[in-house]
Length: 163
Image (tube, rainbow, N blue to C red; front, side, top):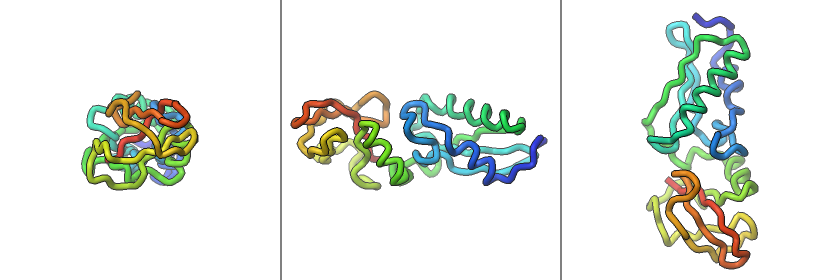
């Protein structure tokens, strides 16, 4: 049974500020992976959507959700992964995009993309804003990012893949 009487929106607010383990400057709400909270059969069900099917951060995020809720007296918590609809960069908040850039990760230029790995995409350097950048690798420090180099300031940086 639910041990504390909280409304689902209160539980949502408690867990919404959990930082993404791979990009700690954005929250799971900023990233758009926190999909909702409901009460079912006496338990709080927190639904999250991974950015990629095999995203290794989901286990840690699930543990953090349970930990923060238990610290507030909520003991009957289930974390539910949902893959439908699939996560998309459309779910990134504008605030998340600004935080990514300030952190040194180029956010997606726009929401929806026609090509997942488009090499024609112009990616601006998050350090100097130059549009003279080159793709080094389609795979960056995590599966959701690609590695770029700025041809002007010579810095390398991750760019969030649009999908």
